[in-house]
Length: 152
Image (tube, rainbow, N blue to C red; front, side):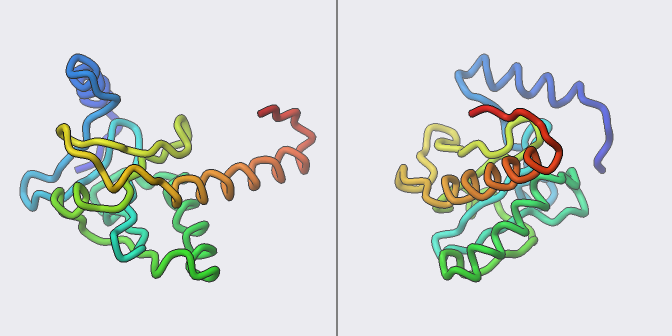
């Protein structure tokens, strides 16, 4: 069950940092499916070029993750991605994915490059860069509409 107690997220982040990592991945013990990271959603790009977000029934309903799904549909339209969906993702499927990405409003798009010492994908992150470009194009557009000075 999702709650708003941030202590487990803080403790997991501390544990990850003690082990030389950025963050831990929460896994549903009942079904061994990935859930989320501390204060972040997780999406994967499968080796078949499918963008997959864990089902939102047990994880944070993140605005950035929902926006990423919308941006993913643009990449489907361009033929870059095959599909976009929300479903259970096993830890094994996530570990063997082409790309894994933490997404949140604090860290809009951050690639996960390693899990338990094993590389995620082949080191190339084309979808991360595609999403990053689409996301910041949107931010620039909004900042123009709102007359906000946004510097890169």
